[in-house]
Length: 271
Image (tube, rainbow, N blue to C red; front, side):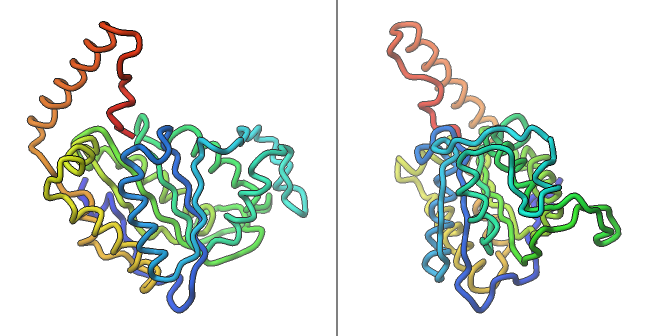
């Protein structure tokens, strides 16, 4: 699978000429300490610099119950869910947003579980009636609106094609909520990126590209493929990455055996 297919950058402008409202959510269990944030933060900085209004949430801070698939919201005129939780506050912001930014570490070839719950709970954006939309059965939108969707993700494996199923899922999700899929900011072998940033290695072009991608999305409605490729560029040879990763994991295991207060695997910041 090629990088272009993975990134799936769109060519249609959706927000040019105004200051868009952006709803962003980071599903990393490590909140702002994980590798997903290393790409998401400069991306949002670029969007804000270009004039976007940003609302950013960490799913770890939210109380959102799983969808029970009773579909009551789809039958109700107001789309009200049976649950009373933080989605009461979040869903109107999602509905009003011009750009949705969904950020997640890659977890077993897909989104982190809490983000999937949030996506499932976006069902009230739709109503129960079915239509033929572009030659395919879809549920009708409750309040038709032009919006864009962007994926930001980090991965602990070396190859870019590990993101393939995640990107495909996000593209399908975007179609179902009638959003323009505007690109994927993907960072493979993210622990190397994290370590190299800390050490001052020459990798600043990556957050710079994420920042510029945010600016371009707001200014032009698109993200240049060259920026997405820079964000995902290889940092070290694959064999070197495997060797160094396994060495660090062995050290962590040994430290945990010496003391119950030793570091956990999450201290690597892989997400």
